[in-house]
Image (cartoon, rainbow, N blue to C red; front, side):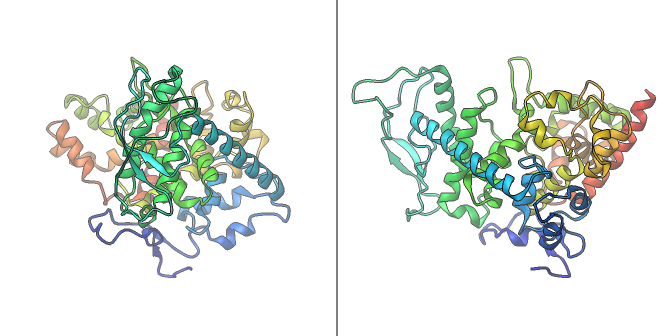
Length: 443
């Protein structure tokens, strides 16, 4: 229901009463500013074609009403093509649900805890692939369990197919690596958004664990890394069907997986940290010089903001608003085809897309990139880099005056928790982006 005075973003996501010290929401959902269910439905033709341009500006200004947030996100993240019909999308949804069921069954054959309603929180095999015989620590997350929300129980585990007492099948290296991550997923799931009443239901915890376990199996280059549970959790909250939530998360990871890719020489997010350093050096040279003097020229203090997209700095509701605002600002109408059709992504920056489609179908941030000819061989910087730069600019006076070491930098940035204004940060990011494009052209 609309409330004319504006409903706080967090009022739609109940918190457990004992969790009092939480970041306060600054964003309010307001009639006439936030994308409503009525305006969203009016954007579809009778056949189901979506006029995406008509809703992007509304999302950029006032976010999405929680009642329709899940289905809007499916378009913003590229799960569905605005140029598809209702029937085409329903067929695609059913195919994807079947595909997820097959992937989940494949994982279940490799470890019977997947889909069982139980969550592993201790290692089940050694690095050599030998099963650990000690009882496993698991959370019983079945819907019919009556244990309290944090109760742990012990189990000797279920033997995998082909394994009998006294014998053990030698596991493939990829299976071993995957199984070694399952307990870490479990530990992170138990820590993720536990302030929400939503996660008092154990089947919701189980959904989160299953999705992350399946994703870790299909994306073998990245697997599972800490922070992914924070990115996946909102999908579980917003989309009731587990398969729909999985594909929404998988699309989000298409954008962010580079941050999690690690080699012996580098961490994936280093590219964005280097971009942040370049932007700050160009637009805020005094601040950059000061940070370098303090030994922070690598900008590792901003690591967390990139990895979990400000989930720690904002309340749950405000972080969702920030995400959808970012995605609307950098929306590209080719996103669906880039994900669905192999090879299309490599042509993303060749310069043809602006001519082929109406400029109003692009987000405001992406329009600026097109207008300024930012379509070189290097992909345009994601808006998240300018968001972090905007936060640093906002704190520049404090950092210059009070930071005498890296610990001070981290403390000043940590003090933002609960005080960061998502809308202001996005506005600041857009201004910095415009300024950066102008200056970068001259250099």
